Image (cartoon, rainbow, N blue to C red; front, side, top):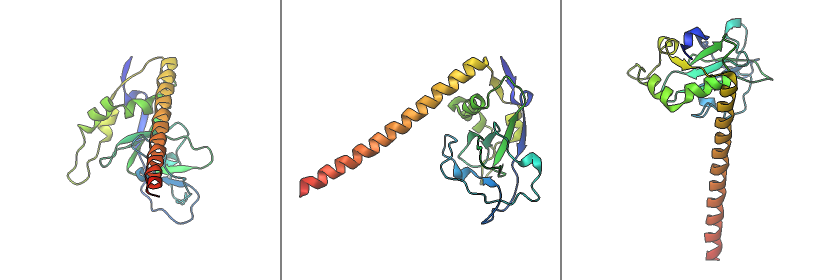
Length: 185
């Protein structure tokens, strides 16, 4: 089945706020994620929730879409121990259709074919931006929940495999450098 994103989820922008040294919630920004939408840093509460509307407080399962700049990606929000709000660099996609898994939607949005399509609509001279209208009208292929879960699990395993290969390559390079250095002495 295919449907437009607006028929399965609401899309809203993140909130504009200024981070502080000591806050009570995290303020998510694209710089905290890699190109695959994986969190690369330990988050600290750096935003005061006073004045932040409840609708901007993220819920587990929300999908963040980085729509500004050249680093576009989707990430699933699943922090258990900290409340957070997304910056205006993100669209927050809140799924209301119970037949869609957030993990699957995140994978689908990050898929190279989807990303190429979405980026083709980016506008802006200094900072390219993808509009809400483009995301609203994006066609999503929706397989059964079982197939969605299988796709996500396979993708997750491939991602872990890639991380292990990168670590192995790094260790191998260090070993080679040490062996070369040892050959000098």
